[in-house]
Length: 97
Image (cartoon, rainbow, N blue to C red; front, side, top):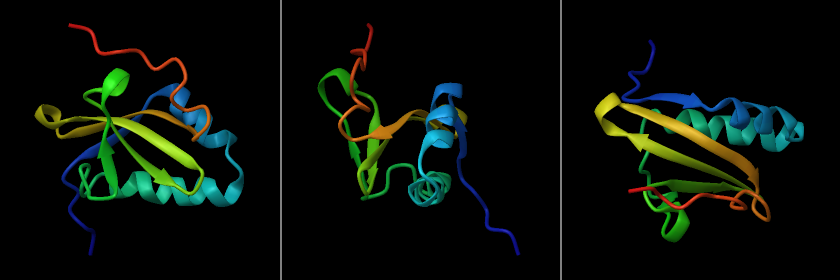
């Protein structure tokens, strides 16, 4: 029996490239964690970002971080960035508006 997923998960092309570039073991763990976003995009394992990342959420998988935006009106999660904790936040733009 298939589980009902509440949200769809989409990755930006740059996030797909970053995922593909990870070593095999963390790649599998990150991919599993991204899949879990479909069930609960605001799980206790994720944190709401502040400052330049306001409106975004992030979670950790070992030394790697996944930065994403929840789009509740579309019942969708958009993964924006995947990367090592030392570089994933570089160049993150502040919210506009």
